[in-house]
Image (cartoon, rainbow, N blue to C red):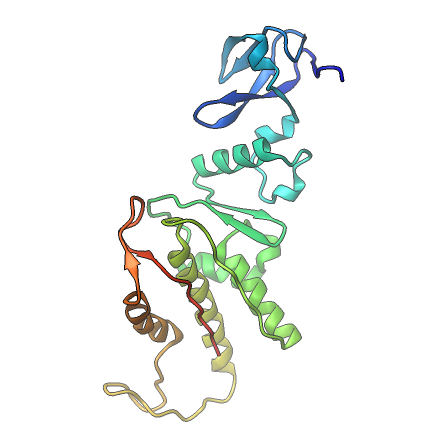
Length: 239
């Protein structure tokens, strides 16, 4: 089997200790397994034949941020990791892979959960806006109301990935759109809680927040990445 040939001006995925792969532009033609000079991050770097044997072909499109990674011309480990990284560096922490939303914890506050942004997803729908937890919630709510069928959303990830926060944001959207939908329908007589007026039932957010301390008391723990890591799975059912 012949080695891959890299032509002048083409792009290659270059192995990197920190990022696994980084983009490199070919400055002179070479064959994988031969010494070569590659422009990486604006600097020309020399590589020996042992290293170039690990090079992979790269489509130039991968230099751009892609909202939905199914649109990548070459979908592989290097292109996925690089796309997530450059989007993360630009504070675009959400990326779609079809109907799946990939979220990278920014470990800082971002101004992407305002009332205005929530309203935009509610008005315009998830198909016309960038990837966001609000978009996933909008898709679920829209399918539920259109098809009259229950919907489910799975939130998974390692410790400290932001699962609890993502769940809260998802439910914030559902609570907002369902409360607005409820205002247009017939109000139901409810028994108020102490301190609340008649017909003033606790909101969905209030009910979930009250349940969280009880659920977390079952087995949270401190880890290297998270001071309050859940040691169990959560099932939240909204009716």
